[in-house]
Length: 356
Image (cartoon, rainbow, N blue to C red; front, side, top):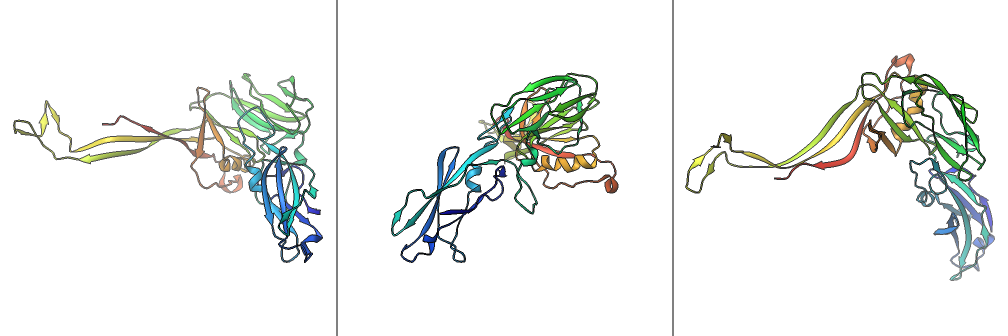
């Protein structure tokens, strides 16, 4: 049994993860009802078994385990994301079935580490080799935040478990990953009231500190394309709104008392003709950034498509939200001049008022 194709290390769990195997038994006419059997082992445990008849054109067994492997990664907004949160280790073990019997394991793939990133439009299956021991971001290196910001994230790929340096305004801290292949969401926020630099293992970000201004300042923390969390400031006009749904019934405009008296008013209060007996509402929020440059528009496409977005409210609470906008236009200064990004947020919670 031979593995003819195996995925590369650090390949995305959101792309096809294809294994191709071949054995001459597949064309042996004495091996009746021949099948390849592939066992998927994730982090040392068998999680799935698949069977495949040999392909009619080349007699190979082809298995794509991407949909299975994806189920064993659950990203969370924590400082250090590791196994099960950002990556998993996978082995594939092959058996054969023929003449009504299943053989023992005849081939085992080498262990592969697959990451929870995505690629978008590609001409090959890409991997994260170029980002080892570097920030996992393509955001512009000039960052804007208001004074006193508590959390502002930049994710970092710690390929090994060795310490690396984070220097904020000249003060250096050694960060030690919990394990190899950790994704560390580094908080570069500081209480400084003037501009400073944040250097992550040699990569410099220039932080421009802003005053709070006239409007309420919000931050969105979102899962980016590499599987870490990043932050964007929305410090311009914001507006709250409510989607309201009411249920009611219709009545006659008059009432008849127990003594047979007909009235349309009682103690100065008109009788209701249409009575609302239940009301629900959903809170929404529209927020906007300051002027953005071309590079920021390219980067913020990751925010718009992100499946995990948290709004940090003014009291420091993180609320999970969904972005209601269904399209995103990548603006360019040459064509669109200076412009800002306005997005609509849904808090995904329905509230009830009093029932009558």
